[in-house]
Image 1 (cartoon, one colour):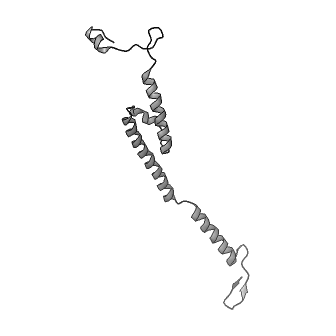
Image 2 (image 1 turned 90 degrees about the vertical axis):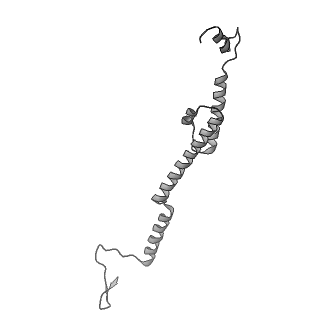
Image 3 (image 1 turned 60 degrees about the vertical axis):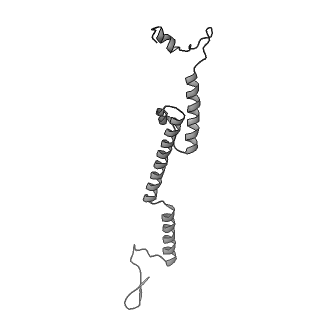
Length: 129
C-alpha cells in the first residue's frame, strides 16, 4: 500500500500489482543468474571465429604434411579439420591407401598384373606407350 500526502495509506488501484522487497530481490537475482549463464553475442562470435581460425591452421599444416609425404595436395578436400587427432588419423589412412594404390598388383607372366615398363628400351626401339 502507498501513503498519500496526509500520511494515510491508500489502496492500490485495481489491476495494479505490487511486489514485496523479497519478490523484487528474487526477480533480480533470477535475471542476473540468466545473464551470467548466457554467452553474449560477442562471445559467441569470438568462439566461432576461433574455431574457424583453428581449422584454417590445421588445413595449412595438413598441406605441409601431404607435401612432405609426396601425396597429392588435392587430398586436402577429403580431410576432417575439426580437431588435430582426426586430421592426423585421416592423413595416415590416405597415406596407406595411396601407397597401396601406387604399387598395384605384382607382375607375373602367368598371374597377370602390369608388366614393368622399360621406357629406355621402348624408346630406343621407337615404340610408343
